[in-house]
Image (cartoon, rainbow, N blue to C red; front, side, top):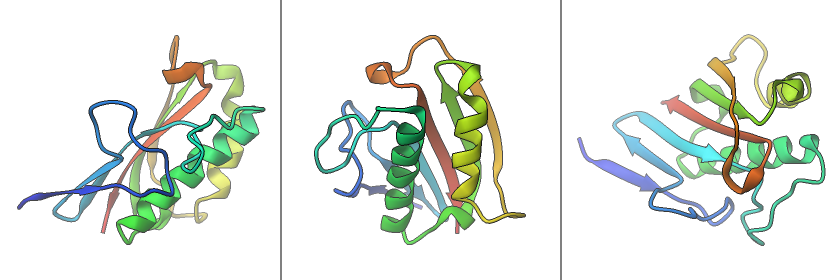
Amino acid sequence: MEKKIINTSKSPAPIGPYNQAILKGNTLYISGQIALDGESMKLNNKSISDETHQVMKNLKNILEEAKMSFNDVVKSSIFLSDMSLFNEVNEIYGSYLTPGNEPARETIAVKTLPMNVNVEISMIAII
């Protein structure tokens, strides 16, 4: 089973030695996404709401490039700069998911995220 690299111009280009996602068999591994706009490569970080919506849009674009959706996601990892942001991020994150079909997840507060953003999310999806 060979791996397939998944990249879309609708989400930000990788800023390091990685790809947006890797499809291996029926499993898609999506790299952590931050609030970079895919077209301008500028941060959309006026608020935690803007950041979270941009992250979820980036993830959605990658899922669609792999012919998947949030309904195919089985695991999410959310990284926050501060747990005080949890409620707002959680509400926005949940608004992109189908009730009753939410993936497994952990949410972790970390000291610093790339480009000093407040939220980064990675996902695993299975067809």
